[in-house]
Image (cartoon, rainbow, N blue to C red; front, side, top):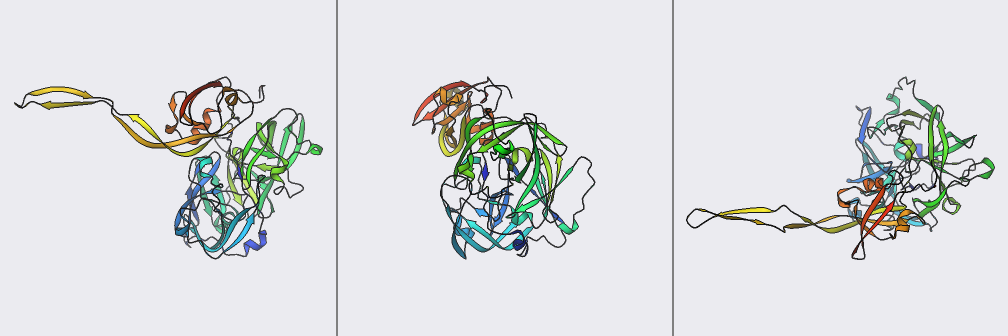
Length: 446
């Protein structure tokens, strides 16, 4: 299970009103467009061209309109214009954030193009999602692309396929399950079933491709949706309005019709973090990337249905970070690397072979990515070993971190219980080493 979660939903438009607006269009002779994506921490990252500038976006079914982040360095090229100031609310306990609503933008996704797209530009430096994922993230998009196409999401082969709705033909699939969708503020909802402590509980869930957890549930004692005594307190992720904290637990199983997943991770966000996002009385939570990636999807907003087919990820175990460390990309640092010894040969003045010698102590200095500890779970193995927020991790078990992606570094902390982790860190210019063993955060078998 991946630790970063981004739910940035806000509600501004009705479904019927958006349909009347102009649409993404494909060239007349094309019936579909295929776009490759990267799956980073269960999130879909793909290229979107905005006003002629290629950027990296997240596909997020939890947003109504595109949002642009981290644009200070490209704002002139984007030519953001026709703006008005508004304030947005999302997850987190912070205040509303200021954004510029911009009209008449040109968006291009592969060969799909829209020439008068509204978007929201946020210039707040604190809302830079690049460090959280370790790859450039400039924005998010959801409803505007999903309403205009039948969209295949192939998590196993990592591609999107945008189909013209009137040309798409459903193939017979005996191993698929089809679910009806409900919409609220342009966001899709589906039903699933929790199985826990001998009780079966139906739940209505937001489909959230912009979240990297498995399930988020809102505590409801009357319906029996609680972590009980089997949980630990933790950082859950970043929302539009700040960090989100809550409880982490598991349920015995979670099913989507005949698809049954066992020992599924569940996060229960603190009530303060979701007060502006839990406006539907019958909504019980969200189903997110760590479940969705176990299927290949066909999303059909026009017919209000979604088709699920299990893929090669289906049987992968759900796991938790057993170190207590949350790491983010933290810019670059200078790294000194030794180069190979060089043997130098020469000739004497009489053309005879002169003695050779070896030039040693050669080295190179280069800029390499730095990774910092930004969250540390209280009482975790890493905290008890003496690690602190702000420590720059230099190597893990003798391997330099600059040779790894952020996602690979995170996976070190999801290893088997009892595995020893040795970290060398830079703490305010002083190199220090620490050692601890990965521990089950529940202190019992799951």
